[in-house]
Length: 178
Ligand SMILES: Cc1cc2nc3c(=O)[nH]c(=O)nc-3n(C[C@H](O)[C@H](O)[C@H](O)COP(=O)(O)O)c2cc1C
Image (cartoon, rainbow, N blue to C red):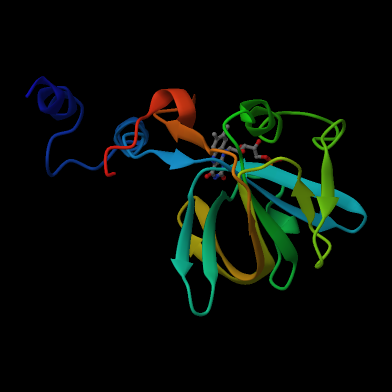
């Protein structure tokens, strides 16, 4: 049970949860990696987001958690068309690009536009286009609730994210439920 004693050394039950413990423990939960795109006027906007979940099938709703400090946040307004681009396992470079400092994150990136006018990145595992339906306060983040209008899936395997690192699904894991 050495894993449990490591955690106990960092956090005693009843103590307030500090930032480092929160990050460390939540990092145990693996996710995929998305890039949330929209347009601000003529300019495509996008940032990398791993805190993503499918919320409802009918009506089709997704959520994305965006930091209040994100420069992109003002672009994700209620009613705006957005696309959740689910990155493929060979797109870790795009994940870093859309989280990094670039004058134009879309420069040299292959993309088109969905019917609502939001950018769709090429060669992803999947994408969902829709509009921002509601925005909820959530501490140092906000939760964007997205009403989905169009979905597409390819046969590309998804990029994985765990404990601050990205993994290629095809080499990192083996399915055990078949
Ligand atoms: C793999 C990965 C996952 C991330 N997940 C999130 C997330 O869920 N929410 C968030 O606000 N930022 C997340 N980030 C950080 C943002 O992408 C990063 O802060 C970005 O620079 C924000 O861009 P902006 O300030 O231009 O809006 C993630 C970054 C990476 C590399």
